[in-house]
Image (tube, rainbow, N blue to C red):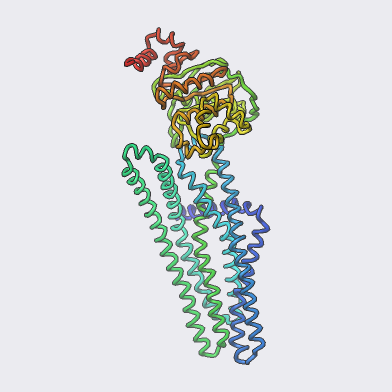
Length: 591
């Protein structure tokens, strides 16, 4: 029992903390928000006036034939309804805009935060789940931001006002009504825990199905190539079924809650009609009071019903905001204390006793252990060897995509941790095997190398990458859309655009990570020339499985899972009759 109490207390504190953290987001929109709340309060007052005027008409104006007062009261009601049109319009439009603007702020903050997250975050979180945070969760928060305060205030004002007026009519009848309210509260508290559980489960499942859809759409060509459409449908249906089951649980709880709550509210009407009828039959209340009392019961029960419905929205909104906060509380990439702008580097790189492990679900996997290597400025070093030896990982450590466990990486004699990440990465260009092009034009994708570059510089970079002539053959030239992930271009064309991007950046350090391994031999030869031009005068690290592309490197390092096995020039390694020679002869034995 104490454990359950502590658990509930912890959840209460969590929700209070979330609400306290959310309130500051209203500050930039405070005037609009206050106006929205004022309109909601005014509508509540009008809703309370209607039964009172109706009671006066029934009890006084009609029996006493007070035509002028009757017309005046009717005109007053009509005036209130006309004013309510404007008030409700304001609530529906500008009230929602408060939520939309808060949602915009939250989305901007979340996107900016995600942009700063270390790569390990993206290794552990699916794209679809992250998209769900940016869309579904923030929408629910937006709805809560608007409807939460507005509906709660409107309901509370109406309830308090209705109860107060009912007490002025008949104390005993009002007390009978109030005796039923604790039943509503107790039942709501009882159902709260079940609501929270099903909403949390539904959010997780929804993120998973979004991730499955994103993966299936991105990999549609692979699925078609391997005729795996049935497998993808089966995988999707498993997630879809889990989503349906989760939704079923949610709606089952909702059905139990709302049907029971509707009965309790209907029972209030039944009790007032029955007891009020008895009071009227015995002459304790007049017909006008009786009819007004029935209308006030409706005015009283309607906001209670609204509060029960808003409770669902509050749970959804707080769950979404909790997930938002969990990401926002994750540490982002940051500069070390006293880190400085490194300016333009020469590119003298040294690995000093570097060790690195990947972390996944609390488990560590050692990839690099006590690695030492020096690369002189302007030199080209090739990393070769079997998969899993850490070649690509070493390339990711230089721009600090991941943090090393031990040792140090120096560039121009300075520890890369003493440089700001931005200035460090401005000195490094990367051309990878899996070229990523953003959905936009060719010019926009090349411009990623330098967003300040003018058209002449972009064209010059394209010429140096041997892609300019092809671009000019297209109907829209540099304004041609590449499609999602560059789907409208061939592998060689995408690779040339990636090279043009690197030419435009003009970095002193260049990393070529399997830059041609996915291309056919003819395309590789054409692109290799562009890569050779790109490498001139830069410190270049080449990761390659095709050894023909690294024969002219200043040094070749053979990496194995145990570390450096061999190092030297092509001729020196061939003379060793070791691993490198075996790999080289194996690749060319059939030529």
